[in-house]
Image (cartoon, rainbow, N blue to C red; front, side, top):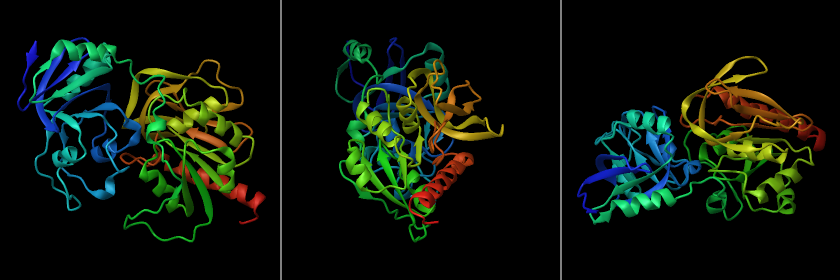
Amino acid sequence: MENNLNNKAIILMENGTKIFGNSIGIDGIVIGEIIFNTAITGYQEILTDPSYYKQIIILTYPHIGNVGTNIYDNESSKIYAKGLIINNLSKISSNYRSTEELDSFLKKKNIVAIEGIDTRYLTRLIRDKKINKIALISTKKYFNYKKILHKIRKFKGLQGLDLVKDITTKKTYSWKSNHKNIQKHAFLMHVVVLDFGVKNSILKMLVDRKCKVTIVSAFISYKNLMLLNPDGIFLSNGPGDPTPCNYIIDIVKKILTTNIPIFGVCFGHQILAIAYGAKIIKMDIGHHGSNHPVKDLKNNKVLITTQNHNFTIDKNNFPKNLKITHKSLFDDTIEGIHCINKPAFGFQGHPEASPGPHDSSILFDYFIKKIHIYCKKKYKRF
């Protein structure tokens, strides 16, 4: 059966369910994994976060686009998400920082999107039915439902795929933000960031703490990494499944033979765990939002955190040379780890937030303390 939508758009699920809405962004047909994000603010930061590479995002908050977009809130140079589903698109933005409306931003970045959807109903549907593959159809051309449904069911998902190779930087560079609020520092500590899809706000957090920041490819050799003489190594966030990324796991294992402080976030947190022998498993429903409570097991305090992951550390056969430092109060998944005999630790959430609360930003301060200790012993700087 062939169809023509004009200005309408359709969500087609792997079980054949169709939900109709209005087309925004560009015309096209995209197939991908579907995730829902419960954040109330920060749609621009979410869209430009490389961790969402090849995913279709549902935003559960009903009003999207009311603050427009601007160059300062981009987490990267492009939109990595494959598509966007929202309830109500605000046609006019109200924000002194806004330079462009969301619909125009989506069109400029070549993103297929749909509005007019009851996103909270859709979220319950994909959660309860465990649906994770859909198509967004927004085209004036004729198309065939059966052929698209066949492609959806043939799509194997993102598990087992190395997505980092597509988005890691191709060259080494130093990062300096053009944000007007960043002060100039006399840089003291050199942090090398392994780029698996790093967000700009993470780099800003490091610069704000008086770090010289160098970003390197995930494919960098251990020899070339050490030639940079890092005082600390940051394992960044990134998309998808870390298990197939053996080239990253191998270099982290080599770094762990030194005493250089390591901080891994999200994808980087999982890479650190794998390097110590842990296994990573796919979650039925991932964590995506800025309202996730996490318990710090050291002091029993609760942190409200930003989360963005579909994979987690398997609690079964957990390595003895790691200790669990944080747990989710939603589903008891592992949210933080610390190496027993090395200054290396990881956090599953996003301590830089952007968007979200800054409860866990103290982990950056902890990382800096570890670097201070390392520099004092090795270089006698402090």
